[in-house]
Length: 377
Image (cartoon, rainbow, N blue to C red; front, side):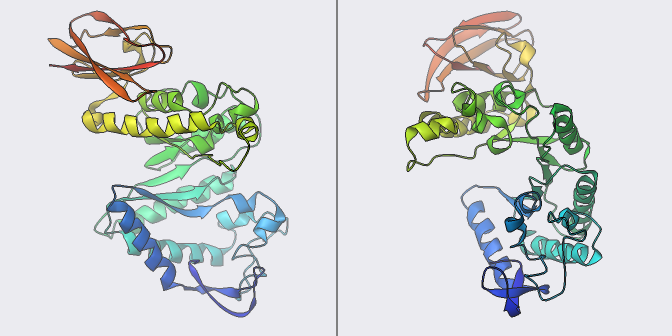
């Protein structure tokens, strides 16, 4: 299904009737609601990706199948106003007819799911980083919020990874555009093309100004195996991201039909994938146990540099190299109960109690990386 009816006359490039971009297809929105509702009943949030940006910056054959390509609609609408084969104008205000088509579609999406609780909006996935596209996304966020203001519920609107092909300064500028936007939540992209990207190996602590989703698909860790077999999206990346204040999400690259050598080259090592998947569940379990809303990334409280804490009440510490860690418990007035968790085996064990009021050392009871959970009694 597509948002618009396929009425013809004439056939689009896929051999089906051409689109009438002035007629929304009710069947599309029925299916949208059914799927979002079904996910909600299973405790799953849905980020509704309203638009996508890949077809406007990739091969001409991809753009050729888009509904606003002149060969595919009966309305005489051409999203490639300057004829350069990229159609970046679609995500701008250059073509008023397309702007209104987009707005009518977005209004219908909001009407369809507004009463559901498990909804996030994502303006566009992997759009090219240009001033015009940033401006278009920002104004689209404003349009959504203005329309939602008339509705019973207001759902968070996000702005995600803007693709910059240039050197690190341009990639960093693309991320700054996300943080400077009026989006409620953002998902930054890589800053260095390669395995040394900080989001891949040592995510910087979130600032707390926006909800930040760290997506393995939008940073280099999912494909870092091209350069280093040791730097893949694995369980360690999930724990590091979580303790630095992110909401990590993980796009699996598992394809058991491919030889292991190919999987390794792509960075999709099956052992790492399985461990990352499990870590998503383990971190969620701790998130539900803790008073997460009161906890912030405070790496200076732990010698390992990874600590999510509500000082004096709860501390979650990650030890990438295992061994011993010191934790600043100055804010804790009384005893603190320790729990060790083995992130590779999924096993927890009691670690005794420690007195608060000063910095204390804790030694993991097993080899390898470890997680320490401290809670004031």
